[in-house]
Structures are given as structure tokens and as C-alpha cells.
Length: 257
Image 1: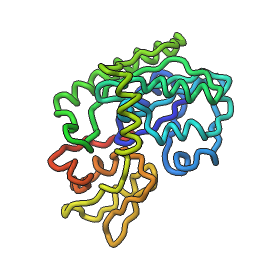
Image 2: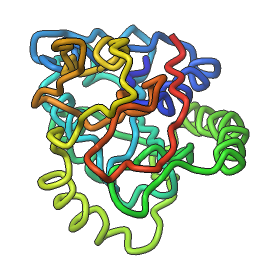
Image 3: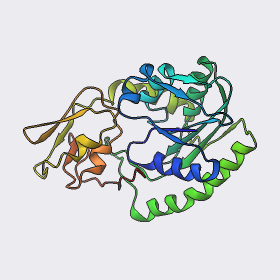
Image 4: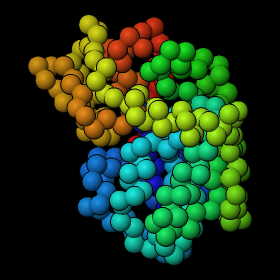
């Protein structure tokens, strides 16, 4: 079985591609399952392993998925192997080590961890923007072959990490990531520009059910995962994160549903 968290569609695309090779159902971590995982029981089908698919957040795991892994109830999770597939724009640091620690604390059996390079989506800091159309297309064209290789490694029960760590990997994960988690995850800068048409797509699409429409305008609550689905899915490009997103591009959201 595949458990996936996807904000703008990169991880979902990888999960769907992986499903072609290993089969099994996809469980999407969003809505109440993501908000209150302790209230849910995920049952692992007999004969299947568990594959976790999620994006990298500043060279670490999405905080909401770290919380999910700590709290979710999983029937049969101790009897199977667990694998990880991380999607990233460039590199992952040591995000896979965090996943191994969390899985180990639950008594699960973490085996192979992999990374797949996908189009950049993070736009909330100076110097960060989406990829050019050419670069994004190149990453997407390489993805199926990479996923096929990952599926083959899973069948061989590969137990190491086949990832792109990048330079200064330890510093990125152990210094930059904690800073990012503490100081750069606030939803308060979110707002809309004058181009907002009150379509409500951002509110309907939020995986955390964190956006409510008030007087025809979206308002962000406190339980934001900073997945940026609202920013990238807006058909009018009217969602802004303070001044940080001014003049920046969007990635087409494709959740494969």
C-alpha cells in the first residue's frame, strides 16, 4: 500500500506512477485522516509493504507528516517492510534519517529510502521560485524511469538510501530545517490580491481544511501545512504570501484524482 501526502501534485504523480509497478491502493493523507490520525486505523493488506511518499520541506520531512507518523494507528504495520520515496526540487539532505527514526520508534521496519527530483514549488522566500518550463519538463520526463528503478529496488528489498543529499547535507537538515520549522511555517502572511474572484477553489482544495470563505474572500486558519496548494491552484494567481511571492510563478497542480 502507498501512503501519500501531496500539496501541489508532485508526490501524487510519483505515487500514481509507482502504483503502476507495485500495485496496491493509495491512501491519501489529507482531511480528517491528516488532522486527527489517532482516530483512524490504517490496515495494511496481507502480502503488501508500506510505501510512504511525501515532499521534502527544507531538507526535512513535512512537520504534518512527522506528526502523522507518530500518531496514526496501523494494523499490520509491524509485520511488513516500510519504504520511503521523497520528492524534491534538488536534494533532500538527511530527511530520510528522520523518517527512519520515526518508523523505528513505532516498531516498524524501515528499509529503502529514495528521492525523486520533481519541479520546484517553494516560492515563500527570496531567491526561491518555480522552475522554468524547460527545466520542469525535463524533471517530469525523467520521473517515470526513476520510479521504475525504485520499484525494482523495492522488489529486491533494498535497505539503504538511494537519494540526492546535496552539499552541506547535515547542516541543512540539522540547522536550517529546525529554523524553518519554527520560524518559516506561519500561515499569517497568506492573503489575496485584487485579482481574487471568490471562486473558493483554495478553500475546497486545502488538505488541512484550513481555509474558510468569509465575505467572498479566503481566510487562513492556524493549522496550515504550508504545502502551497492554495497558491499554485489559484486560477487567478491571486494568492500571495506577503511580499515574498510577488512576481513569482505557479506550478500546475495535478493531484491525479
